[in-house]
Image (cartoon, rainbow, N blue to C red):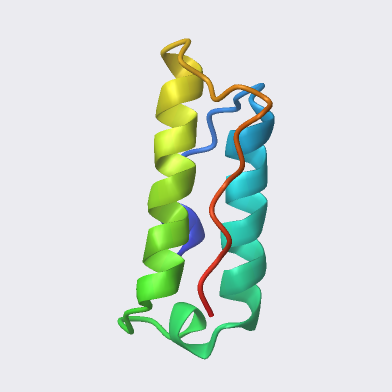
Length: 74
């Protein structure tokens, strides 16, 4: 996962923000995520979760505050 893979369009959705923070925190401590060309299933899944939360926030279908983001796999 690289910074260039993330577009910097801001959302006002806390779930999208939390999903991005979780992905970044994972990537910071994951050797696979920090190695160019290496694949990390967990990092890719976290990035997909962020992308989906961002899409939903932009389309007006943001998660309710009762919903919880899935726990990251380790």
